[in-house]
Length: 338
Length: 122
Image (cartoon, each protein chain N blue to C red):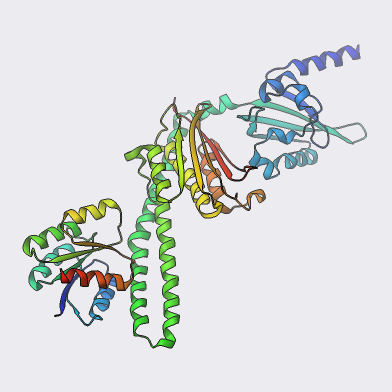
């Protein structure tokens, strides 16, 4: 009788299609798989059994050590619930709710983990389409842009002007000084000039991109041309992004292109925009030397800013090194319009 | 012959240093300094300078308007636009207003002085 029950239970778990229910060994390798997991994750049992469960996580989470951290918490506290992006076999992402439960036997030894995964992509999309949320997001993006514009004006019209005057004064002073003191003032003058040039770059980065005048694609092309980098913008977008999505796409691309220009020593860069999962997928790929600190999940190179922007908009952003050289910044934003 | 120059800029720091830089040249004399567009027109009419160093963004009318007004009253005056704005739109507007040359703020003093001298000789 008891055997029948456990057989039925096994059939139940195997047959459930709404959630992925599977087990991990204590080290995090998949040891069982059900129909729901196959449907949600895209792997057949024989493809995934034996592989480490970090396969399901996006590269940025793997880099930050999230999979192992989740097992540690589940082990210490008995269970852990998380919502976040996971990656299917075909590389596409879904928003998932995950419960990891630590399984101990009668002697108190950890036997492994039970994992229940649900695909919440549709519910998340429905939430994002709520008018209040959309309005709040649009307002946030607009307020940020206004703030940037004010900073650009202030720096351009006030700070830089004052420093230009100081620079002119220093040049005048250097002319009048005896030879032995001239070097000091000229050195100072050089420092002021390089600060002016950095401030001009700042103004260039924070000023409004003029998407409403020329469209997203041309605004990006214009920015690329201004940075004097070789590259191209390809777009197969089926729908033009709304104002706030367009500005978010522009700002993330701008950050990515700034990184390429400053650190990657790339000879060319390609920006590709396409429509994926009712949203905008953007890929910025260069052929440079890669970003040195990528693996430390560092706060350098505006990586954090790019991620923040994408995540606030309900999407994701990931930066990966390409084995044959170069870096790819890839991000996706949902199209929250009905 | 001494080159008579008028300076017009709303930024006091720039005004003062411009005057000192140009006055430092033995062949130049700053004859007047204006702090807005209207004053620039008045002083240009009163002093008839050979060269006017004119800021682009200025209160009370702006640089382009001032340039047109000055040239209407003194067609022989040579105007050098001296601006922090180097975008094509700003440069174009000043060219159309009749300025002879356009120099970006931040150039070396020697370049600026050379530009003023060149205009004075035209």
